[in-house]
Length: 124
Image (cartoon, rainbow, N blue to C red; front, side, top):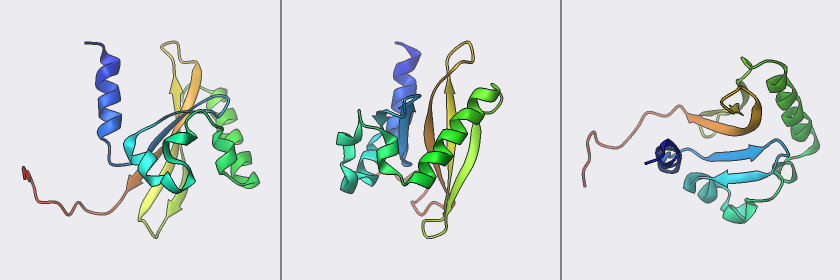
Protein backbone atom coordinates (compact mmCIF):
# COMPACT_ATOMS: atom_id res chain seq x y z
CA UNK A 1 0.00 0.00 0.00
CA UNK A 2 1.27 3.50 -0.85
CA UNK A 3 2.31 5.74 1.99
CA UNK A 4 -0.02 8.44 0.61
CA UNK A 5 -2.96 6.20 1.54
CA UNK A 6 -1.84 6.31 5.16
CA UNK A 7 -1.35 10.07 5.10
CA UNK A 8 -4.80 10.61 3.61
CA UNK A 9 -6.33 8.43 6.30
CA UNK A 10 -4.56 10.44 9.02
CA UNK A 11 -5.93 13.71 7.67
CA UNK A 12 -9.42 12.36 7.14
CA UNK A 13 -9.64 11.08 10.72
CA UNK A 14 -8.41 14.36 12.23
CA UNK A 15 -11.08 16.17 14.26
CA UNK A 16 -9.59 19.52 13.25
CA UNK A 17 -10.38 21.12 9.90
CA UNK A 18 -7.70 20.73 7.22
CA UNK A 19 -7.94 22.80 4.03
CA UNK A 20 -5.14 22.26 1.49
CA UNK A 21 -4.40 24.79 -1.24
CA UNK A 22 -2.02 24.93 -4.17
CA UNK A 23 0.09 28.02 -4.90
CA UNK A 24 -2.73 29.53 -6.94
CA UNK A 25 -4.77 29.49 -3.68
CA UNK A 26 -7.14 26.91 -5.15
CA UNK A 27 -8.67 24.65 -2.52
CA UNK A 28 -7.64 21.16 -3.62
CA UNK A 29 -8.71 19.18 -0.55
CA UNK A 30 -10.86 19.51 2.55
CA UNK A 31 -11.04 16.81 5.19
CA UNK A 32 -14.47 15.84 6.60
CA UNK A 33 -13.97 18.15 9.62
CA UNK A 34 -13.34 21.11 7.28
CA UNK A 35 -16.31 20.25 5.10
CA UNK A 36 -18.53 20.20 8.20
CA UNK A 37 -17.02 23.40 9.63
CA UNK A 38 -17.47 25.36 6.40
CA UNK A 39 -20.84 23.86 5.40
CA UNK A 40 -22.56 27.27 5.56
CA UNK A 41 -20.04 28.57 3.02
CA UNK A 42 -20.56 25.63 0.66
CA UNK A 43 -18.73 22.72 2.32
CA UNK A 44 -17.22 20.41 -0.29
CA UNK A 45 -18.39 22.75 -3.07
CA UNK A 46 -15.49 25.01 -2.04
CA UNK A 47 -13.04 22.46 -3.48
CA UNK A 48 -11.77 23.85 -6.78
CA UNK A 49 -12.46 27.46 -5.79
CA UNK A 50 -10.06 30.15 -4.60
CA UNK A 51 -9.43 30.38 -0.88
CA UNK A 52 -9.02 34.11 -1.43
CA UNK A 53 -12.74 34.35 -2.24
CA UNK A 54 -13.45 33.31 1.37
CA UNK A 55 -11.42 36.12 2.95
CA UNK A 56 -11.48 39.89 3.16
CA UNK A 57 -8.83 42.05 1.49
CA UNK A 58 -6.63 42.33 4.61
CA UNK A 59 -6.63 38.54 5.10
CA UNK A 60 -5.85 37.95 1.42
CA UNK A 61 -2.88 40.32 1.69
CA UNK A 62 -1.60 38.46 4.76
CA UNK A 63 -2.02 35.06 3.06
CA UNK A 64 0.06 36.29 0.13
CA UNK A 65 2.74 37.62 2.52
CA UNK A 66 2.92 34.23 4.23
CA UNK A 67 3.39 32.48 0.87
CA UNK A 68 6.20 34.91 0.02
CA UNK A 69 7.81 34.15 3.41
CA UNK A 70 7.51 30.39 2.78
CA UNK A 71 9.26 30.90 -0.58
CA UNK A 72 12.17 32.84 0.99
CA UNK A 73 13.64 29.85 2.80
CA UNK A 74 12.92 26.12 3.01
CA UNK A 75 13.05 26.44 6.80
CA UNK A 76 10.08 28.85 6.80
CA UNK A 77 7.35 26.25 7.16
CA UNK A 78 4.83 27.23 9.81
CA UNK A 79 3.48 30.54 11.02
CA UNK A 80 0.96 31.43 13.72
CA UNK A 81 -1.86 33.41 12.11
CA UNK A 82 -4.83 33.66 14.44
CA UNK A 83 -6.11 33.12 17.97
CA UNK A 84 -9.81 32.34 18.42
CA UNK A 85 -10.52 32.75 22.14
CA UNK A 86 -14.19 31.81 21.71
CA UNK A 87 -13.18 28.35 20.45
CA UNK A 88 -9.95 28.25 22.48
CA UNK A 89 -7.85 27.50 19.42
CA UNK A 90 -4.79 28.72 17.58
CA UNK A 91 -4.56 28.71 13.79
CA UNK A 92 -1.41 28.29 11.71
CA UNK A 93 -0.48 28.25 8.04
CA UNK A 94 1.84 25.40 7.13
CA UNK A 95 4.01 25.10 4.00
CA UNK A 96 3.74 21.99 1.85
CA UNK A 97 6.93 21.06 0.02
CA UNK A 98 7.94 18.40 -2.47
CA UNK A 99 10.83 15.97 -1.94
CA UNK A 100 13.30 18.64 -3.16
CA UNK A 101 12.01 21.30 -0.76
CA UNK A 102 10.15 23.32 -3.37
CA UNK A 103 6.99 24.98 -2.11
CA UNK A 104 3.95 23.31 -3.70
CA UNK A 105 1.12 24.61 -1.52
CA UNK A 106 -0.03 25.23 2.01
CA UNK A 107 -2.66 24.30 4.53
CA UNK A 108 -4.42 25.79 7.50
CA UNK A 109 -3.87 23.98 10.81
CA UNK A 110 -6.24 24.39 13.76
CA UNK A 111 -5.08 23.47 17.25
CA UNK A 112 -7.75 23.39 19.89
CA UNK A 113 -6.55 23.94 23.45
CA UNK A 114 -9.50 22.41 25.30
CA UNK A 115 -8.88 19.26 27.31
CA UNK A 116 -10.46 16.14 25.85
CA UNK A 117 -13.79 15.30 27.51
CA UNK A 118 -14.22 11.78 26.16
CA UNK A 119 -13.61 8.82 28.43
CA UNK A 120 -10.21 7.17 28.02
CA UNK A 121 -10.36 4.17 25.70
CA UNK A 122 -14.10 4.57 25.19
CA UNK A 123 -14.87 1.66 22.87
CA UNK A 124 -18.61 2.24 22.83
